[in-house]
Length: 326
Image 1 (cartoon, rainbow, N blue to C red):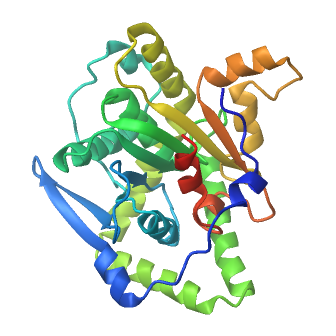
Image 2 (image 1 turned 45 degrees about the horizontal axis):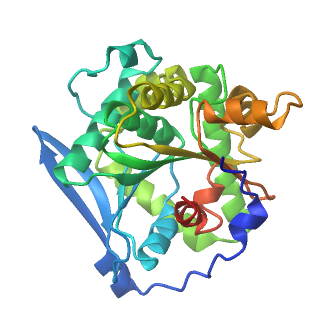
């Protein structure tokens, strides 16, 4: 059984990320889109200058994944991995799940639509047995892809995912989301990080210019946030594990969980409690049984900056280290 990785272990051995020139950035980070069944799918492809790994890394963004996730993507490219970043908005319609038991799970239509889009993109790019990293809502989307398309994903890494911390309401999630965004903006100002703040504001201004903002915001609050709350990721992970035990597939998806000890959006302690291995003292055999019901490895990101976005924000190399430990 895989043991826990402490924050100290995750930080030791992490190399410093060298600065990237504007020319290299333009060469490596390319915005692309493909049309699939009349639906345009947007993504960013990050190409390594020297490819060392065959399996690409697919990042699925969340409701408000920070722009600085690009630092993590760049780090993967420096290690020789091809990276695809996608953040489906409304997703796309897809075929019904072939496994009737999946239909019984608590998975919102919005999450399934996003999962359909990610799966369609991977198939269009002829990518199989990939590493999928899902942050926040993207964790629920990645889990749904693994459940519906077991042949596509080799490693599934859930970073501060939604759907694992227990009962919630759309109103409470909205409040926590707004609070987190305000705190992040305030932190940038207090740290005099004006260039970063200006850049983020510029990104959002461009987004607002090119979208029907009223319609988009209404959909996100009426459909997307309730869909996040309605989806039970623990059910999906248990489904994946049970299917692998029952059908003994030739391919197997390994599931890793990364949590931050100060995640105010999806509380890490509540996630631990729902995983049922920290609620009370238990012997090692009981802990392993509870642990294995859902995931294969748990990495805790525990320092004073370990917030919802921290593993993809403050430090780089966390996900790469997990992949190297698989």
